[in-house]
Length: 413
Figure 1 (tube, rainbow, N blue to C red):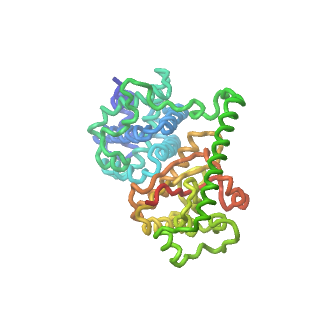
Figure 2: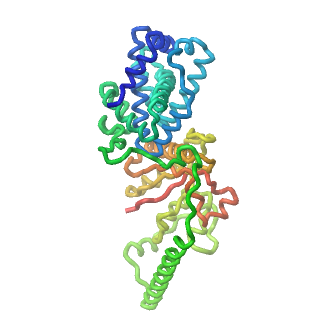
Figure 3: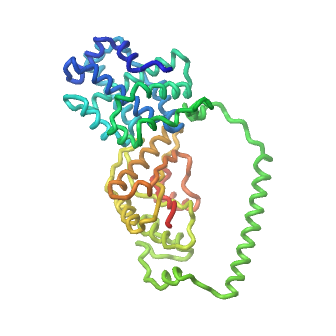
């Protein structure tokens, strides 16, 4: 059984530390214990939710092991010093964003209801560094790896049952308390959430080189099979053409219907997709949806801007987001994937996290516009997916960036 982190906090902080926390929150002393319990419980709930993916658990492990631990025995002294208190609040603000992502505002509003002065943001900015320091002490004392920390976190759930309101679970998009951190439960079969070592702290040991024969001959067989398949398809098309064209009723209706304008740039040679205006997201996507032959992996970059290395959107009312919402309303069976991409800068965990949060932001805006949640998925691709080769020319002209938000059609029927 895991040690109760809430009781451990009370022991480490002592009466003076808990009183100092109440003072920093402008709370009466009698509310200090309730405030620290609320702050720590909400922080742990956010961490359990964050740890639901291997990437998220690795991200938490980084935060716990890399953050400068507070001296909890001297908390009263630190909180009484304005400079030190401001530094703790600043660090806590970064942790708040990392743990709760796009849900920060909603979570802090819920936390505010537990305080007489209503400052839920300040409470969590002070509680998260305390929780992180307690976890850091556990990691060092027991020489935990990322899987050990995951096991310790899931062990905290039994101590949180009466301290997590349904409103917080809803804000975290968790259907019930039993589902909070459920992916960390292993039932004794394996260690939970163990990401690759190099994903935790950047580049680790070099991978073993792959031999030439191990990939060349399988690749050659695949290419031969594809060539043979392509030849068969071409032959079939030729035979079909000789028999004369035939169209389904759907194709006939489409051919008779008046065409819509593709965009600012007229089509010049090539197929329809090649001639689409590179900057007209709406026209490109509409034309793609009308096409009978669609590349399932084609992505449609959106003109959505974010603040550097963060998920703070700079143009939440971007025309491309409005256009996408309108297209989805016009096509009620259309489901899409929002994909976030960032430039590779060495830390795989951070890159994936930022790209996921950015994709989540765009999804949330679409939900606010009335699009059903089951029609949109949001995925952070990190820096794993380069700009498609057929978009190379656009990339050179800065029309498509490697750091981008893109849309991919999942299903139209």
